Image (cartoon, rainbow, N blue to C red; front, side, top):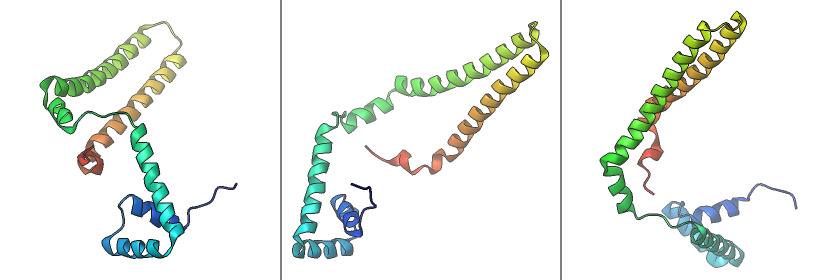
Length: 146
């Protein structure tokens, strides 16, 4: 069997089962399901699949437990401190390695190339970190509740 793109009706059935249709679209689709048994069966199969998937998911802590945990000082210090120490350690390791590499008897080419490699990796890391921190306030998923 060849893979194929889903039909418009299959996409509508998925959107209906997920509760993503606008009220007018939902009414039209419900009317169609009452007239087209195959479409209603498709939706029923998708809803059953959703139930099976939910049963397979591991149990999650209650929302109030997550809020309680996020409010704890130890939890907050762990996140902020962990990132801070990781960044400090990476920068310190880079500086330590650079100083010791240049003090060693290694060939000049090796010193230059190694410094370029480590410096490039550090630049990529810092650029990605800066971009993430600058775009964090605009990330729509930071406000999503589980």
